[in-house]
Image (tube, rainbow, N blue to C red; front, side, top):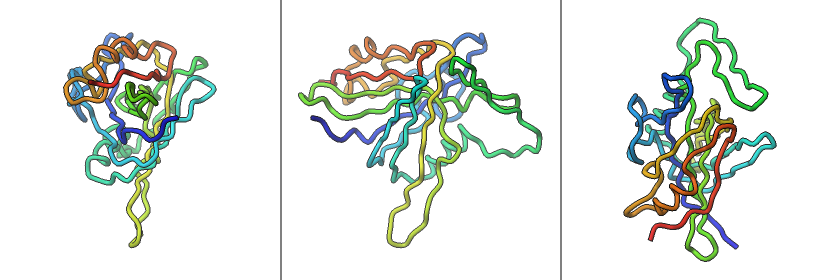
Length: 210
């Protein structure tokens, strides 16, 4: 039996490359260069008391986070991947194709597409870490909160998966790997090199970094 997790999910911005037939993982919140290592992540959730992946019949995943993190970085991230509309113009709706791929409507932007890497429990023998890499969007309802004098703020956060239109290659350096990391870079490179075209996620137990 296993329990708990690492209280950690990293998020990277993803867009369709200018070639139109591949994805790019971008650096930081606003960078246009390709992310090279974990320091290029856009945001991390680190105050989680419960992470709830719910795998869907269509091959995607929805993740609900029971989250206590309420800081400027959270809202900077949300406002970047899902900017509040400031235009009065009409935006055509997003369309989900019959293969599960989501096409962003005219007037939208593929910058709202994100890669989420969630680190779960250690295996029963303590040698591996459960890792879930998912492609999708952050729900626009995320960031909602309640203000009470006798309780902590708990902004909502929900990730809604989609199927990859192309292979999404993920470098080992984008994981919490290497010196002081959670997972072994060689093993994670072998087990989660990408989210394949047509898939919504990859879930593996990866060797713990020694």
